[in-house]
Amino acid sequence: MLTFVVHLCVQWWRSWYPGSEPGGGGYIAQRIFSAKDERHGLLSVLWFNIAHYAVRPLAVDPDGTRGRGALSGVAHPESGYMLVAISTMPHALRGF
Image (cartoon, rainbow, N blue to C red; front, top):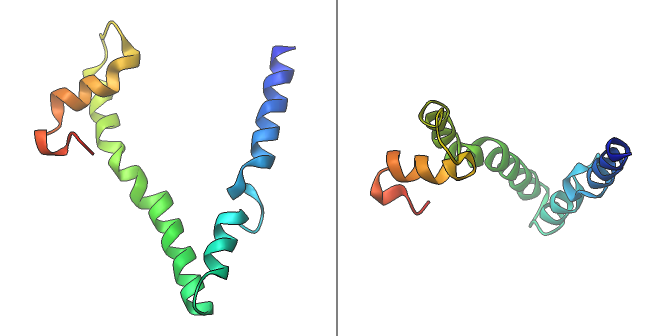
């Protein structure tokens, strides 16, 4: 029963999530409709996709890579991200 409920919840989330529609969803349509012309609409959608899928994950990847080796014997693994951030990141970058 639990597997069935989880399956239903995942399907509901997948169909409800705004970016999951075949046309890109409300976010993409809003960017296109609010642009000055077709060229600006295309460039805004292109920049959004590049920033969302290529630039945004770059902030998390270094900590995750360092954390794999540093957290092999941690007593509380759920607090591991902060332990890695405090122990390995420079002081100026900790706020990011």
